[in-house]
Image (tube, rainbow, N blue to C red; front, side):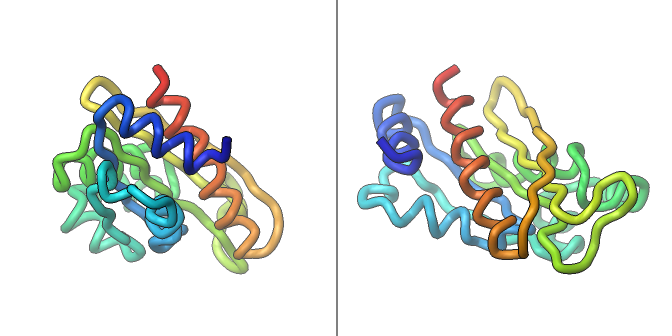
Length: 156
């Protein structure tokens, strides 16, 4: 069974809703989720927070964390996930932030570094990934790993 169908079946079976907060994936994660028929039964919506002011003013991400650590860090991904889950009253949420390329990156977080966070009422966790390839390839890897991560958390 493909990951999107598995996500659909888990959400419907558990009667849970999900939402997305996306930076580096720019809405493609939400588009992929809604490509499955019946997604409207569990997908509440998403916020594309491509610029930091949207992360701060819409998703309630701490400006000081962005200033201290940049927008590409576990804390920002987690705050994005909590913010969208709260704003859209979802049971679970997923957030993405990172350097998809071809520019960006730091010594600590080089090009291809992505943080993905999943949030529920019980907990919020994030993972750091470093993907290789061009921008499109990195974004596609983020979507695949993000959906897998969300599915794992829904199963717990």
